[in-house]
Image (cartoon, rainbow over all chains, first blue to last red; front, side):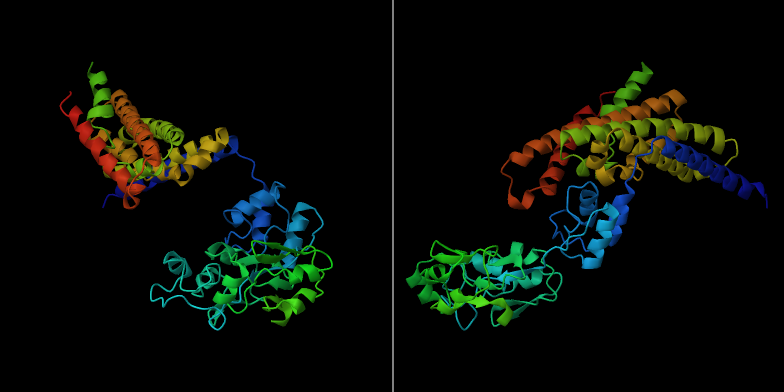
Length: 267
Length: 190
């Protein structure tokens, strides 16, 4: 067998490859684009889940944003304190630990409390149920209880108990996926330290709320009058507690006639 | 005269996209906006022109003398892949905006069958160096022309009230089909 039949192809194609490789190497030097190593270093300290909780398209996008100074070093809500400290070290700034936030469900309309309009036998999804005449619950603003939030949570922090989502505070990283998923906008991401919440978002007048649910906010305003720091506002027949002003005294919860205000820590 | 006919043939009659149906991936992927389509068209023209030139040289000065013409597929792909890497570097340096707009479709020019197709076609038809380059550049210009036309149509369809089931790719493919039928009109031009 003619040895050249193997040698020629191997050498020629190999030589061609080598030639092109060298050419590309030279071109790479000439057309080099400066890469910020900070971006790489920061990326290593991010969880890599690409959950989007920071508001960016993914961990890559956030790394770029932090490196350019556009975002704070604790912009990622999923990072633990060590990771934030590492990112802060890379950026050369003091690490300020971000306040731990958690998802809060502002509704207590579970199967026992909330009354039903009709028997719903459709798809067991809040999004779909909401389309069918506003859902089976009499309250048009309350939790539908089919668990679209649970499906949205990629950290397994939500369990459906008796038709109401229960957030596991240990697992919740406050990424905001449930907040976006809920068609009734019942779930909010709030600081964990703020423990008092009005568990109702119903804009219905008091009489209608009472007819629809045992524990809804009727907008009576007793809580607002009790509050010494003016943290409670009543708008559209529903009370909201401003978490930045609240001093956690609990007077509002005592006075509430429907027991719509609860203390998260005692739940 | 012959070269002019060859050029027109490559652009209109034997259009790579609408007559040969090669290179559909960037056709559908980069045609959402006219500026990106123009950028992609320019990149493909550069690659196809140079690829025709270099594959001619490799075929006639390396493969033929050593009687290893059967390796033309490997050699052509080597040439095309290196060229596309080079074009990527140039674009990343000169226009980062275009680079991120083209995204993954820029390295996908390597696997674009239109580029390999033009190299192989040139070899099969036995074109001279000048004819190969003109065929390559012409084919690329035809590709770019149809790409920009398609992008223009797609931009308009964006604002139209398309049926929900047809939105996006389905209506785009139907449009492409109509364009292909329209281009049939060029069939016996030369």
